[in-house]
Image (cartoon, rainbow, N blue to C red; front, top):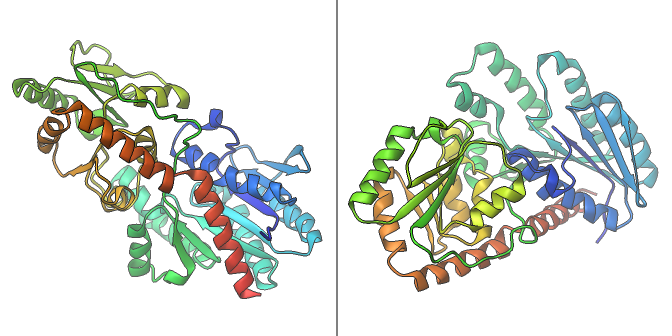
Length: 387
């Protein structure tokens, strides 16, 4: 495979599993570092710029060096060096997280314009990973967006959307950008969140009662403790033996119930995967916002790679990931959860079959190493088609 030098511009570095802390680093390690490893394997250099540290990492021929510099200098320096290979440079731009605010506006816009200038002479191919479209994400976080913020993001979108390829987490967001921003399908593609079969080995679900149901996120905010307790009381009243394991740092510490275990301290990614493997069923909750209806939580891919039945609050993005795989159930209200759990807990042998089925599906569709190689091949094919 013909491979080109690579420049990654992201919020921070994530080169090993120990660097995974949240959805961003999950994607950086899974997609970006695996792309970088493919490039290095074929004898081309990799540069990775962390905007938070203002540090440029250079990896080539088994050697690694780093230097502090601005984004503009990093782009100019990398392209100047990489172009000595006489081939286009692949740029992977994490957007909007690579933009750190208005005080970095001039540097950021200058860097984008520099990339556009190199594009005009065929020296770079810029791929934008639009994990959290900024306007929609801002509205989800704050419930609103000011006029000045919207103008800022619209300007940056205008510059970013003219690059060579936009990568979305879901087909839903791809369609949304076609309808709302008039972004052509020819310039967009979809690579969903993935996971790591090498980090998450398959373990048969525990057979002991009660059935453990794991859920994580801002559960205290998204559901509320009162509603969660009401759900548990209903399950108990219907004689469904379930224990909830809730991973949420905002949950109170004074709750004393045998059927709810709260983990409200920070745990690393390896401890997180052990919690997943110790559960029988995994429950995915999210806010009811446009952003979360269209996109996908990174957690979903890990849930499926663990090989456990997944109950998820309905969203278009999540529905695309789980497809019609048996063992994944959508619900629109938590009132539906008892009926689903009743079916799942009825037969342990059937539950084991569902687990194996989900794991196999995840290995085939959601392995980040495969996704990274597929994206790299798509980029290379696009470069060839334009030459």
